[in-house]
Image 1 (cartoon, helix red, strand yellow):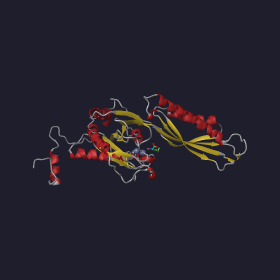
Image 2: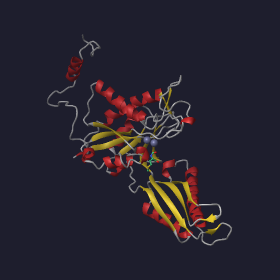
Image 3: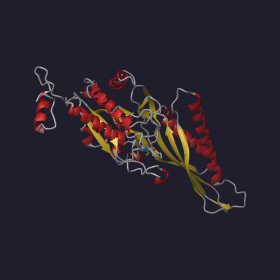
Length: 373
Ligand SMILES: CSCC[C@H](NC=O)C(=O)O
Ligand SMILES: [Zn+2]
Ligand SMILES: [Zn+2]
């Protein structure tokens, strides 16, 4: 038999022949990996967000595939596709007998959808994580409805803020002075005016993408006991996503100033307050970026670099000094993460494996860097 190995060959013989193909010839033996170099980390989270089954065309956990090839399911985009593409690309490269100077690690982590506080946030502090010696990481991105692919080099800081307003209570028929509602209304107006300013700034500049401006939404209003009782306290909750170029200290002072301007007894508290925005450089000063972007050039694929509008586990990786890019290989695909009828075309999924099969050798072959020693 002269072929590369066949189905009737004993698997041990196939392995032996694969080993023989690795050129471990002195004086430059290709031993495969160089463990003195930092590794590549392929991260994905395994949890998914809840579903409203009544709004789905198909059972969201059946992985239904329609006659055109669209696969429906929670996690098809966010981000079970990526976990499986990593595995399939690595499997393909191993079957083909490749080895690279840098080790490739894959992590499958929990709890990302609820902030990663019991997942990646803890993991990056563990000795087991440090032992991976990750020099660069890939994590999730978003689909792109056009022919282009999007890559994310930073993300906005999540700030969840509750403003509580206290004031004078009384009978609902009276003109009571200094009510909680009036003061809360002032703060809500200030914050929503800021929201409108940022919205306009985004809308009027075609060069700005969503992640480059700060967003805020009023997401909860709480308080009150009865129609005819003026309450002593009311609160409003806001979901801020602060752009990475914002001075966070000054922004926090602005929030306090809006509360103070509304009157006495208006305070704020944070339910989430990310204070470590980081940006992975996307120019040739960053050899990881050079390797990553070169693959897209070579494959003749368009790449658009953006700031991730929400949060991912990449923030924890970047905060401990690991350059990370958020990338989910889905072009020509509407952004359906967290949505009803989340779906992905099987051809896009398969193409993604091809892309990782090109990307991983390039990243795992980045020559030794000063940061490796
Ligand atoms: C701070 S916990 C929130 C995490 C969530 N991540 C993905 O959707 C998000 O809302 O961005
Ligand atoms: Zn996700
Ligand atoms: Zn998600």
